[in-house]
Length: 147
Image (cartoon, rainbow, N blue to C red; front, side, top):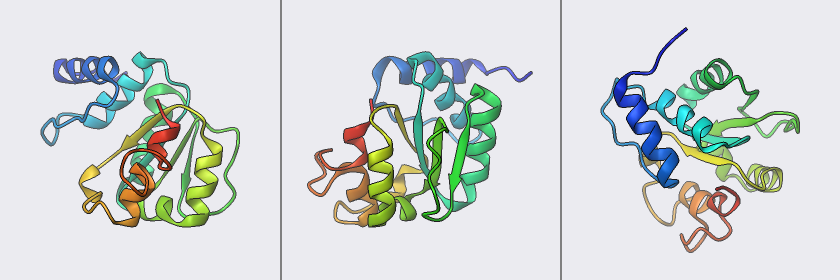
């Protein structure tokens, strides 16, 4: 069984205690597991992970392995399963109107995880508006649905 490094334990505790806390730890410090550990500590039951295409399978595996939750990777706007704890999809797909609507209806609470958040560059981009809302104040975006 894997164990967290001290930096991961510290990062997870900070994220769980502060809610909306970015994890700026350096590459190779295990940010994914730190984030999932914070999810557990905070007592969340469900989550949405937005990430680059290359990270979809990694997130699914780590979610299922580290916290024992079920995860569905969405590579298209195919049927969204109601029985999963986590949805893992790309920023671009989540920003599409049909997918955005499905995800918005699916979640009433939980944790929103933004992997590689620098993908949200301009306040007018579809990705950014999907997450933060059209006025980037959180209303109408995924942030509104999550703890």
